[in-house]
Image (cartoon, rainbow, N blue to C red):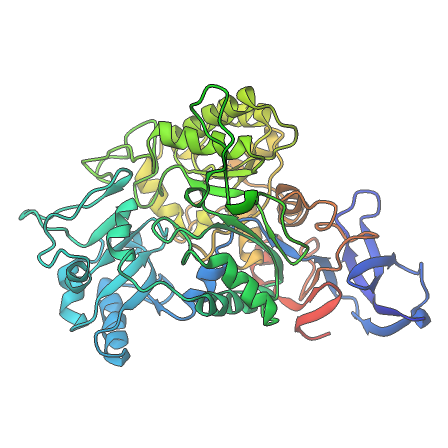
Length: 552
């Protein structure tokens, strides 16, 4: 009998404190069975000589909208990397409309008003280049967007008047009382509800495209936060079926943990003792943990508030002068506090891991209070509830997270791509509370790594670079006291992310019995000049011992 594959002559970083380095790694049936010379090379069917290349555990993005990464490949790119001015954005929309089928929707993604001179595109500007096409442009944050008049017409508002303003949303108006074009947070549903729902196969195509992109970057595992509620997040009610279809077709290249959005959960017949908070679950009582090593259900996701650069995150203090919405100078919760409480406690009681999006410090206070109450009412061990982003937080709030056993899920790349806009939004006085990293480690919290792609680039080494250096797009050094080490950043991307999804027994370290998910890098991140971290690229990505991208 021969074992499957041996990878030898590598500089293998195991991320295991007991045995941090190895030169060879043996794999059988997708698992690691040997390190160094524990099993002779003659006992393996296939042997790959790594010729001294650096190897690390596969990157695990703990908050990545994989389907949206794939969808972005199919949409008009109006992000900062593609357009530098409003005129260039409008020209990109014009070209897309010229080639689209008559009357069809034209969707773009990634625009950032902070990189376009500070102003959002308007409906009138889009009207001038779109003809008979309805147009919708996703903001970079994915918490707002802008539509043209034809899109509003199809939504029942041909003159852009009387557009409803739901709780947790905003519809800025011009001097004549018409919607300018921008829709904030839950108000996006006015347009999103009119865009044709993707089919299961279309979602599968998005997942497949996202998988290809992820593997090319050395990402072997992702967690997609929030599926099945297109009015808030996700693509369609069939999102998880789309993931299953991609897997059935052999096109789900990465390991995926998927989070259904919390509004998709419903009462499952277990009344609270006080009769006020029903238990919530998916059909047949499905909850966190169902699935296998390739595709599993993780936490349930809920949006607490909005975004900093969109000025919709719920803050304890007003946004900086000139950067806030006069109608909501401190942002807003996506739901009323009572609704947020009922949903989080109901999911907690039923056994779900809960991932609450909280970007502003006021939103963070709200979800901390609710998690504390949930644990008091229905104590659970090792729930590992998550707080996504934690973009503005004090030392006291971080200490409270530690006490409650919560996991912060930050995005280091936000500093580079969004930091200049955040500085304008919160002001220099409060900037030290924003986008913290070292403070999370110092508070004793388990820290994963993530990107929130396609909000920012999904490239792990760009993310690691930014976690270490913390410089914005314009070169501003953003709270340098929050820099972390290369070792901390790489640990977060592997061990930290695995722990966050209750998978530390499977992923994150290259030791006996773990999944053989590895990435071979062009240079060693632990040895290279730290200023060159961003230049390191994967040369091969291996999932379950099988080469899935690149060359060996």
